[in-house]
Length: 386
Image (cartoon, rainbow, N blue to C red; front, side, top):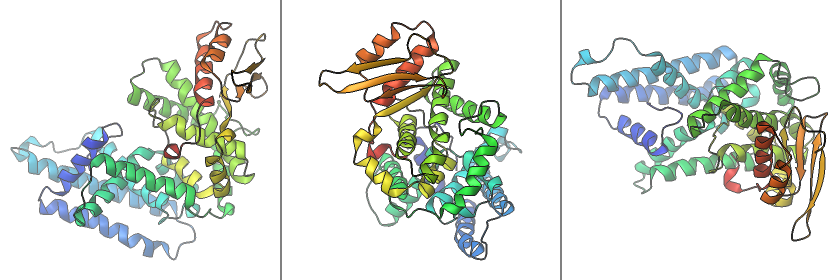
């Protein structure tokens, strides 16, 4: 399967369809091997209360090898001369095979066929290394297969959006997993990303790598050449998700759950297009968030009227400002030094944002206020949940 994270959806799905219809018996045989391996998996897992990391590694590398074989067979079949095809794969092509294999694993985990709560922590890396968008592309292919089999009309973009709808359904409707399984996740998050106070620990190499990977992804998807801006956006998403997930799960905290949903919207909304949600984050939300709280938030837009953006410093003369809009509704801007956050309670207007920016000299302060404005105006839109 020849896909890269940032190809247009139409091109990706068209490429996959052409591959499966290439007519090469060898390609069909490898596809059958992949399907057979997937079908055998539930039987292999029946006797396992914990899915060993070695089992997951073996599955991923086996699938990556099969995707590599499909790619090379396809290249040989389409080349004017077999000698035109290089004997060895490029590092980029091999990485692409691994990403396809991780997307397949992530799909099986999000679908629930491989229970997330049974995974050992070392397997989380495969999910962290798979963008949710790529998983949607894979699911869209499966939807296309079913549609063609039943002679149903449709489109590549329609298949993709149907895949997104299916995944949102898993988030909103699937019964919550046993919270005992979250303890392993909590330990993993605390070890890699969080400090003893529950906030991001920016001294940890894993935290820096997490933000850096998402910042690079934002650059790929938006073309924004300002590295500080890309880093700031990635840091905001990571802060919103990772500083909220524990409280949202263990305490059923509505504000933290709302912050998680805002993080998802911040990632995938059309006006941003950052697309930086990974399969690990999606798995945590699908398996562990309180479904009743999600339903309440979905039906109560006012529950989103709280926003924050991390800022390490802030001018001492601008720590609290109260506003009233034309409808008489009040809002409050404040800076919480202990938490390192600027916060807005309510829905900020552009005029309010600009009035605050007049007093600011540093560019990163202005950027932070722009992000706060954007977040404060987001509501729980159904299509933005994952």
